[in-house]
Amino acid sequence: MSSDSRRNALLDTWTETSSHVFNSVVAANRVAFAAFGVQPSNGDGGLETVERIEADEDLPEWHVELTAADRGRLGVGNKVEFTKTISDDDVAAFAAASGDTNPLHLDDEFASRTRFRGRIAHGTLVGGLISAALARLPGLTIYLSQDLEFHNPVRVGDRLTAVCEIVEDLGDDQFRLTTRVVNDGDVIIDGEAVVLVDELPDA
Amino acid sequence: MSSDSRRNALLDTWTETSSHVFNSVVAANRVAFAAFGVQPSNGDGGLETVERIEADEDLPEWHVELTAADRGRLGVGNKVEFTKTISDDDVAAFAAASGDTNPLHLDDEFASRTRFRGRIAHGTLVGGLISAALARLPGLTIYLSQDLEFHNPVRVGDRLTAVCEIVEDLGDDQFRLTTRVVNDGDVIIDGEAVVLVDELPDA
Image (cartoon, each protein chain N blue to C red):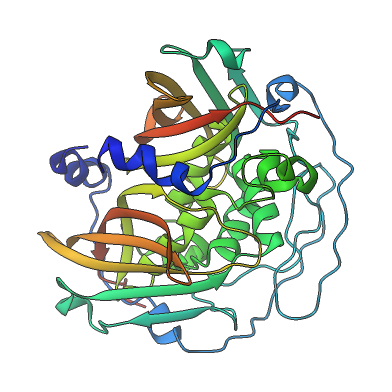
């Protein structure tokens, strides 16, 4: 992908500008035990969550590290990290939400007979931790591109950290970042992202 | 990312070989109404699904198209497509599973004040449909890399199709594919993947 195609694609479509603030920066260290809404099953064979996550919520086991508090001063060297544990529920939820019901992720017995000798999490789910980290940059993060190279498998219960660092200011509020997911020192995913960081809209 | 690093990274770590068959090919047109297991909430603040998807399951609204039935004859030109609708539950489930609680995805009022003038689905969730398509290739699909370029936003209720086509046989059961997600003709995501397709393990 060329840098040019990255920079034009989304912006041609979405022309309005906006202004304002994404609370996750503030919420980073908040232990927010959510007034989860209970959703009854709708009985049509769809899959539903019992408890719904709220916007800007952080679960107690999640952890955020951020070196930039101010969108206006974002630049090369700023880092954001997001840590969470991959649970069995996460894997089941991602399978239903994405449609990826590969038994390598869902069936212990099947997976035990593969080269992995047991179940592993979906690579794209693990890539979602990068999205979670980027969302916590100051401002409103909009994804323009993401490259992912999968290096090591993830087991249910692994505690992973996505580490994102701005390596280039592309202008027009766009930034290129290195994006890596690590598990206790082992690189799980390596790659790069380009994001647009809008101002948060006025309240 | 160099092609070399792609091809070595995973395989150095996972040395065992395997053999056998991924049922999704067979299951592609099966309307499987799942014996969903009911999971009680565990009361520790975690998020749980009411109904769990099963390995190789296809929900009635999902649709698969596949031009190759035989792993041994996979090659350039073979295509796999996977179609599903992105629901509000999918977005909520992905937010919890990934940790990306960006209000652009979860808060109607907030999102209405952004350049999108309403909520949009997470790009990485939409990328998951590519993983779902690749999982339905004949054999056991293992992700080595994925590049994603996000071109257009997705709304709750949009029905999307991931279209993947093998464009290069890299040898050693590895293939490079173009990967695209479309919404009624509009390109949502464009990119490329490299996968390893193992034999399915013996039953």
